[in-house]
Amino acid sequence: MSAILRHAKTLYLFTKSDIKTTVIPVTLFSLAAAPDLQVSHVPHTIFWVWLHLLQFDISNQTLCPDEDKENKKDRPLPAGRISLSDAKVLRWMMIPICWALSYLYSVQTLYASIALSFLTMVYNEFGAHAGHWVARNLSVAICYGSFELGATLVASATRRSLDDIALASICISSGILATTYHAQDLKDIHGDRIAGRRTLPIVSPIIARFSVSGGVVLWSIGLALLWNLQWNVLLLFLAPALLTAFRFLVLKTVREDQISFYWYNVWLSCVHALPGYYRHLYT
Image (tube, rainbow, N blue to C red; front, top):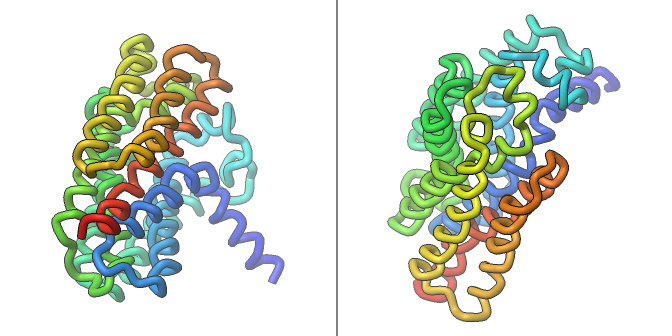
Protein backbone atom coordinates (compact mmCIF):
# COMPACT_ATOMS: atom_id res chain seq x y z
CA MET A 1 0.00 0.00 0.00
CA SER A 2 2.83 2.41 0.80
CA ALA A 3 4.36 1.74 -2.63
CA ILE A 4 1.01 2.43 -4.33
CA LEU A 5 0.61 5.67 -2.41
CA ARG A 6 4.14 6.71 -3.30
CA HIS A 7 3.57 6.08 -7.01
CA ALA A 8 0.25 7.93 -6.85
CA LYS A 9 1.97 10.93 -5.28
CA THR A 10 4.64 10.82 -7.99
CA LEU A 11 1.96 10.97 -10.70
CA TYR A 12 0.27 13.83 -8.86
CA LEU A 13 3.54 15.77 -8.59
CA PHE A 14 3.98 15.61 -12.37
CA THR A 15 0.73 17.59 -12.68
CA LYS A 16 0.70 19.58 -9.43
CA SER A 17 1.73 22.94 -10.89
CA ASP A 18 -0.85 22.66 -13.70
CA ILE A 19 -3.91 21.71 -11.64
CA LYS A 20 -4.87 25.37 -11.35
CA THR A 21 -4.00 26.21 -14.96
CA THR A 22 -5.55 23.21 -16.72
CA VAL A 23 -7.65 20.80 -14.65
CA ILE A 24 -9.74 23.44 -12.85
CA PRO A 25 -10.38 25.87 -15.73
CA VAL A 26 -10.92 23.15 -18.36
CA THR A 27 -13.32 21.28 -16.08
CA LEU A 28 -15.24 24.47 -15.31
CA PHE A 29 -15.33 25.25 -19.01
CA SER A 30 -16.70 21.82 -19.91
CA LEU A 31 -19.42 22.05 -17.25
CA ALA A 32 -20.51 25.45 -18.57
CA ALA A 33 -20.24 24.64 -22.27
CA ALA A 34 -21.59 21.09 -22.38
CA PRO A 35 -25.06 20.70 -23.86
CA ASP A 36 -27.34 18.73 -21.52
CA LEU A 37 -24.73 18.49 -18.78
CA GLN A 38 -24.93 15.31 -16.72
CA VAL A 39 -23.86 15.72 -13.07
CA SER A 40 -22.84 12.06 -12.95
CA HIS A 41 -20.30 12.80 -15.71
CA VAL A 42 -18.40 15.40 -13.66
CA PRO A 43 -15.95 12.95 -11.97
CA HIS A 44 -15.30 11.35 -15.36
CA THR A 45 -14.56 14.78 -16.83
CA ILE A 46 -12.10 15.68 -14.07
CA PHE A 47 -10.27 12.38 -14.44
CA TRP A 48 -10.16 12.60 -18.25
CA VAL A 49 -8.62 16.06 -18.09
CA TRP A 50 -6.12 15.07 -15.39
CA LEU A 51 -5.02 11.91 -17.23
CA HIS A 52 -4.35 13.80 -20.44
CA LEU A 53 -2.58 16.51 -18.48
CA LEU A 54 -0.39 13.78 -16.99
CA GLN A 55 0.51 12.64 -20.52
CA PHE A 56 1.44 16.20 -21.48
CA ASP A 57 3.40 16.97 -18.31
CA ILE A 58 5.47 13.79 -18.34
CA SER A 59 6.36 14.51 -21.96
CA ASN A 60 7.28 18.09 -21.12
CA GLN A 61 9.27 17.34 -17.98
CA THR A 62 11.41 14.62 -19.58
CA LEU A 63 12.72 17.03 -22.23
CA CYS A 64 14.86 19.27 -20.04
CA PRO A 65 15.11 17.96 -16.44
CA ASP A 66 17.84 20.50 -15.61
CA GLU A 67 15.33 23.32 -16.06
CA ASP A 68 13.24 22.05 -13.14
CA LYS A 69 16.29 21.90 -10.88
CA GLU A 70 16.31 25.69 -11.13
CA ASN A 71 12.76 26.60 -10.15
CA LYS A 72 10.57 23.48 -9.65
CA LYS A 73 12.56 21.17 -7.40
CA ASP A 74 9.53 19.29 -6.03
CA ARG A 75 8.74 17.69 -9.41
CA PRO A 76 9.40 13.93 -9.60
CA LEU A 77 12.56 14.03 -11.72
CA PRO A 78 14.58 16.66 -9.81
CA ALA A 79 13.26 15.22 -6.52
CA GLY A 80 14.57 11.77 -7.47
CA ARG A 81 11.19 10.04 -7.21
CA ILE A 82 11.56 8.47 -10.67
CA SER A 83 14.46 7.99 -13.07
CA LEU A 84 14.55 9.73 -16.42
CA SER A 85 14.48 6.40 -18.30
CA ASP A 86 11.42 5.19 -16.37
CA ALA A 87 9.69 8.54 -16.91
CA LYS A 88 10.25 8.26 -20.67
CA VAL A 89 8.74 4.75 -20.71
CA LEU A 90 5.74 6.07 -18.76
CA ARG A 91 5.42 8.98 -21.16
CA TRP A 92 4.82 6.70 -24.16
CA MET A 93 2.63 4.32 -22.15
CA MET A 94 0.27 7.20 -21.46
CA ILE A 95 -0.79 7.43 -25.13
CA PRO A 96 -2.59 4.05 -25.40
CA ILE A 97 -3.96 4.50 -21.87
CA CYS A 98 -5.51 7.86 -22.77
CA TRP A 99 -6.85 6.53 -26.08
CA ALA A 100 -8.39 3.46 -24.46
CA LEU A 101 -10.16 5.53 -21.80
CA SER A 102 -11.43 7.99 -24.40
CA TYR A 103 -12.78 5.23 -26.64
CA LEU A 104 -14.87 3.96 -23.72
CA TYR A 105 -16.74 7.27 -23.83
CA SER A 106 -17.16 7.70 -27.59
CA VAL A 107 -15.31 7.65 -30.89
CA GLN A 108 -15.50 11.45 -30.94
CA THR A 109 -13.76 11.62 -27.56
CA LEU A 110 -11.09 9.29 -28.94
CA TYR A 111 -10.52 11.71 -31.83
CA ALA A 112 -9.98 14.53 -29.30
CA SER A 113 -7.52 12.35 -27.39
CA ILE A 114 -5.60 11.47 -30.57
CA ALA A 115 -5.40 15.16 -31.49
CA LEU A 116 -4.17 15.99 -28.01
CA SER A 117 -1.48 13.30 -28.16
CA PHE A 118 -0.27 14.61 -31.53
CA LEU A 119 -0.25 18.21 -30.34
CA THR A 120 1.64 17.14 -27.21
CA MET A 121 4.37 15.75 -29.46
CA VAL A 122 4.34 18.93 -31.60
CA TYR A 123 4.76 21.12 -28.54
CA ASN A 124 7.30 18.97 -26.69
CA GLU A 125 9.18 16.42 -28.81
CA PHE A 126 8.97 18.42 -32.07
CA GLY A 127 10.18 21.55 -30.30
CA ALA A 128 7.34 24.08 -30.62
CA HIS A 129 7.89 24.93 -26.94
CA ALA A 130 11.38 26.21 -27.72
CA GLY A 131 10.60 27.78 -31.07
CA HIS A 132 9.26 31.18 -32.05
CA TRP A 133 6.72 32.56 -29.60
CA VAL A 134 4.01 32.66 -32.28
CA ALA A 135 4.34 28.91 -32.95
CA ARG A 136 4.46 28.29 -29.20
CA ASN A 137 1.28 30.27 -28.51
CA LEU A 138 -0.61 28.69 -31.42
CA SER A 139 0.35 25.14 -30.49
CA VAL A 140 -0.70 25.74 -26.89
CA ALA A 141 -4.00 27.28 -28.00
CA ILE A 142 -4.90 24.34 -30.25
CA CYS A 143 -3.74 21.85 -27.64
CA TYR A 144 -5.86 23.55 -25.00
CA GLY A 145 -8.80 23.50 -27.39
CA SER A 146 -8.39 19.73 -27.72
CA PHE A 147 -8.48 19.47 -23.92
CA GLU A 148 -11.72 21.44 -23.87
CA LEU A 149 -13.26 19.50 -26.76
CA GLY A 150 -12.65 16.13 -25.12
CA ALA A 151 -13.69 17.30 -21.65
CA THR A 152 -16.91 18.87 -22.96
CA LEU A 153 -17.78 15.69 -24.83
CA VAL A 154 -17.25 13.61 -21.67
CA ALA A 155 -19.42 16.01 -19.65
CA SER A 156 -22.28 16.10 -22.16
CA ALA A 157 -25.24 13.76 -22.23
CA THR A 158 -24.51 11.83 -25.43
CA ARG A 159 -20.71 12.26 -25.48
CA ARG A 160 -20.93 12.22 -29.27
CA SER A 161 -21.72 15.76 -30.43
CA LEU A 162 -21.65 19.41 -29.34
CA ASP A 163 -23.91 22.31 -30.21
CA ASP A 164 -22.97 25.71 -31.65
CA ILE A 165 -22.57 27.32 -28.21
CA ALA A 166 -20.03 24.72 -27.10
CA LEU A 167 -18.08 24.84 -30.36
CA ALA A 168 -18.00 28.64 -30.37
CA SER A 169 -16.81 28.63 -26.76
CA ILE A 170 -13.92 26.29 -27.62
CA CYS A 171 -12.86 28.52 -30.53
CA ILE A 172 -13.00 31.62 -28.31
CA SER A 173 -10.96 29.96 -25.59
CA SER A 174 -8.32 28.92 -28.11
CA GLY A 175 -8.23 32.48 -29.47
CA ILE A 176 -7.67 33.90 -26.00
CA LEU A 177 -4.75 31.56 -25.37
CA ALA A 178 -3.24 32.24 -28.79
CA THR A 179 -3.10 35.95 -27.96
CA THR A 180 -2.42 35.96 -24.20
CA TYR A 181 -0.75 32.65 -23.30
CA HIS A 182 2.58 34.39 -22.70
CA ALA A 183 1.08 35.59 -19.40
CA GLN A 184 2.47 32.31 -18.06
CA ASP A 185 5.87 32.90 -19.63
CA LEU A 186 6.40 36.12 -17.68
CA LYS A 187 6.79 34.24 -14.40
CA ASP A 188 8.91 31.47 -15.99
CA ILE A 189 11.38 33.72 -17.76
CA HIS A 190 14.48 32.44 -15.92
CA GLY A 191 13.74 28.77 -16.57
CA ASP A 192 12.83 29.51 -20.18
CA ARG A 193 16.19 31.17 -20.73
CA ILE A 194 17.96 28.08 -19.42
CA ALA A 195 15.88 25.88 -21.76
CA GLY A 196 16.69 28.13 -24.73
CA ARG A 197 13.08 29.10 -25.40
CA ARG A 198 12.20 32.22 -27.38
CA THR A 199 9.11 33.32 -25.53
CA LEU A 200 7.70 36.79 -26.09
CA PRO A 201 8.76 38.03 -22.60
CA ILE A 202 12.35 37.11 -23.53
CA VAL A 203 12.22 38.49 -27.08
CA SER A 204 10.31 41.68 -26.20
CA PRO A 205 9.24 42.08 -22.54
CA ILE A 206 7.48 45.43 -23.10
CA ILE A 207 5.31 44.10 -25.93
CA ALA A 208 4.61 40.97 -23.87
CA ARG A 209 3.19 42.94 -20.96
CA PHE A 210 1.15 45.34 -23.07
CA SER A 211 -0.26 42.53 -25.24
CA VAL A 212 -1.36 40.47 -22.23
CA SER A 213 -2.97 43.44 -20.50
CA GLY A 214 -4.57 44.77 -23.67
CA GLY A 215 -5.68 41.31 -24.73
CA VAL A 216 -7.40 40.64 -21.41
CA VAL A 217 -9.30 43.94 -21.59
CA LEU A 218 -10.27 43.66 -25.27
CA TRP A 219 -11.38 40.03 -24.97
CA SER A 220 -13.43 40.95 -21.89
CA ILE A 221 -15.27 43.71 -23.74
CA GLY A 222 -15.91 41.47 -26.75
CA LEU A 223 -17.18 38.59 -24.61
CA ALA A 224 -19.44 40.91 -22.62
CA LEU A 225 -21.12 41.89 -25.88
CA LEU A 226 -21.17 38.36 -27.32
CA TRP A 227 -22.73 36.72 -24.26
CA ASN A 228 -25.02 39.70 -23.60
CA LEU A 229 -23.94 40.20 -19.99
CA GLN A 230 -26.24 42.07 -17.66
CA TRP A 231 -24.75 45.04 -15.81
CA ASN A 232 -24.25 43.33 -12.45
CA VAL A 233 -22.54 40.34 -14.09
CA LEU A 234 -20.54 42.67 -16.33
CA LEU A 235 -19.05 44.49 -13.34
CA LEU A 236 -18.12 41.22 -11.64
CA PHE A 237 -16.53 39.99 -14.84
CA LEU A 238 -14.55 43.16 -15.53
CA ALA A 239 -13.11 43.39 -12.00
CA PRO A 240 -10.59 40.50 -12.33
CA ALA A 241 -9.89 41.53 -15.95
CA LEU A 242 -8.87 45.07 -14.98
CA LEU A 243 -6.94 43.88 -11.94
CA THR A 244 -5.03 41.35 -14.05
CA ALA A 245 -4.26 43.92 -16.74
CA PHE A 246 -3.05 46.45 -14.16
CA ARG A 247 -0.83 43.96 -12.35
CA PHE A 248 0.94 42.74 -15.49
CA LEU A 249 1.66 46.33 -16.57
CA VAL A 250 2.83 47.72 -13.23
CA LEU A 251 4.12 44.85 -11.06
CA LYS A 252 7.11 43.19 -12.71
CA THR A 253 9.07 40.97 -10.31
CA VAL A 254 8.93 37.18 -10.70
CA ARG A 255 6.92 36.83 -7.49
CA GLU A 256 4.49 39.55 -8.59
CA ASP A 257 4.13 37.90 -12.00
CA GLN A 258 3.27 34.61 -10.26
CA ILE A 259 0.47 36.33 -8.35
CA SER A 260 -0.67 38.13 -11.49
CA PHE A 261 -0.84 34.80 -13.26
CA TYR A 262 -3.13 33.48 -10.52
CA TRP A 263 -5.46 36.39 -11.24
CA TYR A 264 -5.19 35.69 -14.96
CA ASN A 265 -6.50 32.20 -14.24
CA VAL A 266 -9.31 33.64 -12.12
CA TRP A 267 -10.28 35.77 -15.10
CA LEU A 268 -9.94 32.80 -17.47
CA SER A 269 -12.19 30.74 -15.22
CA CYS A 270 -14.78 33.53 -15.39
CA VAL A 271 -14.48 33.47 -19.19
CA HIS A 272 -15.07 29.73 -19.15
CA ALA A 273 -18.22 30.15 -17.06
CA LEU A 274 -19.86 32.53 -19.55
CA PRO A 275 -21.34 29.86 -21.87
CA GLY A 276 -23.19 28.43 -18.86
CA TYR A 277 -24.48 31.89 -18.00
CA TYR A 278 -25.73 32.33 -21.55
CA ARG A 279 -27.38 28.91 -21.57
CA HIS A 280 -29.14 29.63 -18.29
CA LEU A 281 -30.62 32.98 -19.37
CA TYR A 282 -31.09 32.77 -23.12
CA THR A 283 -31.67 29.13 -24.15
